[in-house]
Length: 230
Image (cartoon, rainbow, N blue to C red; front, top):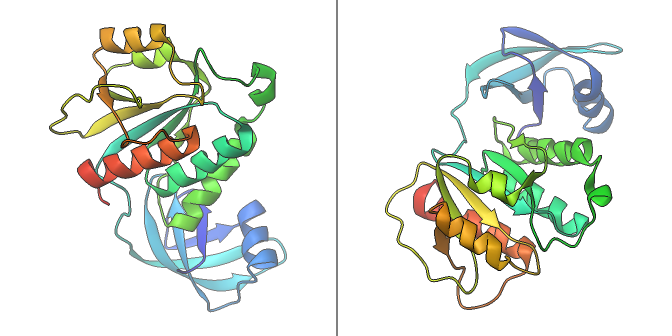
């Protein structure tokens, strides 16, 4: 895949500065005449050619627009905040799998204190953005502020709660859905009761009990295969 550069808007000629310039020139070592791919905050992508390299900017001319690599399924991942290294792995893989948004989920049984994950949004956003560039996506998933379980299940739209002991409920079609993944300690009885009251779908991920990070990645994969573009 060609080197990908994020810009504000696709125009016939674009100027690249700042971090994108530094990474492209100082790290990737782009050269004049090299083909690249540019994508913008509106979800568009196009072919490009590096026309000039200056001290602090690059000039790229753009060509044909490229087809979208985004899934037709709008899937949102409400992922319990688990051990930070594992949580960041889920952020990366969820982005690669096409998630539309990610909601760090505060549940009854999460083990991390709030001060451990407060102030992490900038780092998490960078992980998501780098995964967008690597995977060829054009849309940067929204990364929400941490939210309580009760607030997330109260949101409108379809929601699927994954639980190893739940009796699965049938699902016919989906076009916009939120997936709920709990922490290592599982869901509390109060959370399960509230999910039923809010008419969440319940699903399992096979006969084995998965770690939380595995469950998040597997749930996205299964839903994308059944209702999306995998």
